[in-house]
Image (cartoon, rainbow, N blue to C red):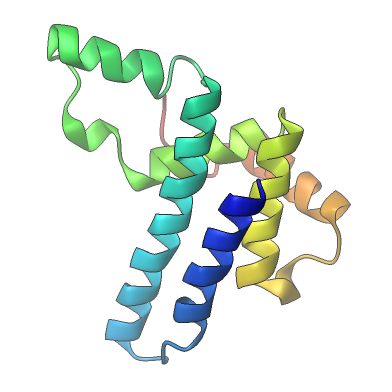
Length: 130
């Protein structure tokens, strides 16, 4: 956990100094995708899945070839992590650390962050299925 948090801080340090232009916004998204990838890798290593995503879905896509690589998109991984964060304390801790580091003004407490996640998941703001 500490290693992952350290990596998140390193990415944040670069992300934080980016400017406000469109190119900077695009670079910022790339940096945030690195964070999502790091936390997702941790979850996959732990064997965490949501409706078979991503481990079983990846195996099925290799065996059957029926799942396009676009299926494994950024937005699906964000939903995956948000759902896991509502059920696993370690994932919640990493996602809260990421969110409160990158956007400290958006969350007043862990309790508020958890409530927001639960709302997102229950309302399916992601509009993407597993």
